[in-house]
Image (cartoon, rainbow over all chains, first blue to last red; front, side, top):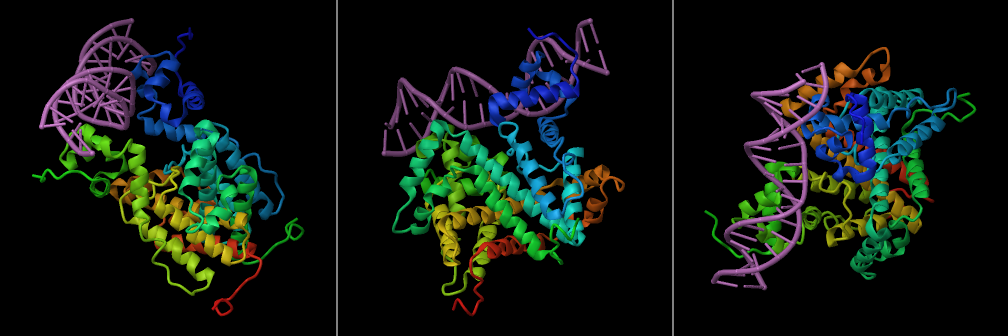
Length: 220
Length: 220
DNA sequence: ACCTGAACACCGTTCAAGT
DNA sequence: ACCTGAACACCGTTCAAGT
């Protein structure tokens, strides 16, 4: 059914991302990928040395335009959240996109471009290199962890009913008064608002540790 | 060699955590666990319905004392970081402890007690239930993601030399001036300082969104 | 109630051999 | 150079049958 095209790294990557959408990260196996490519199981290993290497390049592919779609000449405290939202969009663009990043270290081009853009903006905000790098880490941790939860909730069977019931069963009003009070927001019916709330929090933290507090006007 | 004791859930859990330390999360298989318990492969499934359920209870076991070891009658902005440090300590207590939590949802007793303590402290700081829940999420995301990276770096072969070399090879001074400037802090030779920096950042963010700003004295 | 023994349906990875 | 075909050494899970 598939024309027996000669494989390229790019083609393998593109099909792998489609298989990710269809089967999720747990369902993405080298064998299933090979079947989708129309080749035998071992063929993929000629193009990627290991599944690990493939996953890294898939993750980097998701970041393709995150660092390039930023407007110029805007103040850092507008561009930093814009970059964070761009990362979130990129992670959301594929099933389990965020989980692809969890606990993975890969100095590939798009990931480096993202890091350079973010650390650069924070340096422009007046942070020294170490503070910029560590603030960048904190913000990126937040985005990836939030989207991981977001995609996990979206993938729950029954629309999450079973998980919600399990949470309700575990909650004891006498022992967990505050969790019960916040119960509706733990399940997070509004992931956008949830994300923006935490983003504003991290941003306020960065602003508090920045030496000056430039307004949008001061940075024209 | 092992006395053929009758298995209990607690015994299975304890041995599973030891296997985690020996073999890491990827090396922890139901078969290896069964071997360590001195039983056949299928036996474990009588005590835990699935590996997923076992991992959830292992994660919860790690949190056993996090919420209980807090001093009383201290201001929230002292207790919140104390709780975050307690969570970090708990995650660090076992190999891949942080990864055990990544993308896992489990309303088990110790996890609920941790959440209740944290949301309670944030409510005492004056946050409404939703803000408290979402600030709690942001802080917990940060701790888990930081420790995940920390344990990943610690588990690197060659003490991380190969990973560092790979990063250096990917960095281009012309395209990544800011990353090059922060190069020494990306590898994070000082995980404690790195953690505390981000913790202070998130805490400053919480403080900025809290309605009043109680000092240690005001909260006596 | 608790565990054995065996099976089912998979995995990632390697590698001689083909073209 | 690129891919096949087959193998190696594993997985999680189920379940009749034993005690």
